[in-house]
Length: 190
Image 1: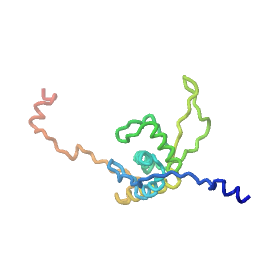
Image 2: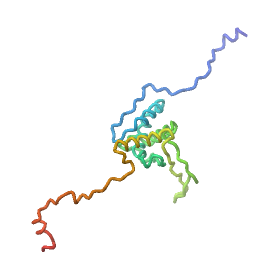
Image 3: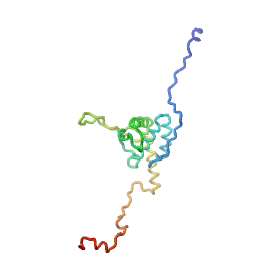
Image 4: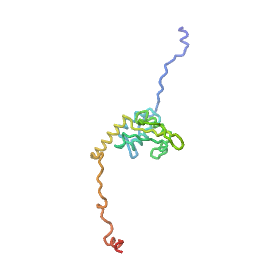
């Protein structure tokens, strides 16, 4: 039996396939009008590191956070329409890249599907259509956005929910025309 075993090829156990990314992931610091809070960015970048479409996912996460991380909207659900986001100049992603980025963001926990009740379909003139999927920030990321909003409110002076006082602008600006010109052009004087 030993002579037969020496002729058989050595069989090694199969290793799990892991994604290999050659370049390290260093997300951009935000050239646009919005930057992710530091705590969110520091948590999101390592989570996206093993994925090939990490750049698209990071830019989509920044885009979503720009519009949905405001103090009143952080815990609400929102809809992501990949057809509307495709070929936007400020985002620069195709529909397929947006779809893949949503999948990755959902896989790492940045996005969670909002709980909805009822049917997944709605009736239209053409027949049944699938309802849009509502997302919300994941349980690890929503508190980070809330903390960042609190820090920003404290930096502004603690006015998080207050409205600014409305000052009438007409009382502040004097008239630029002379009183003689007003009298001449007035319809009352004619």
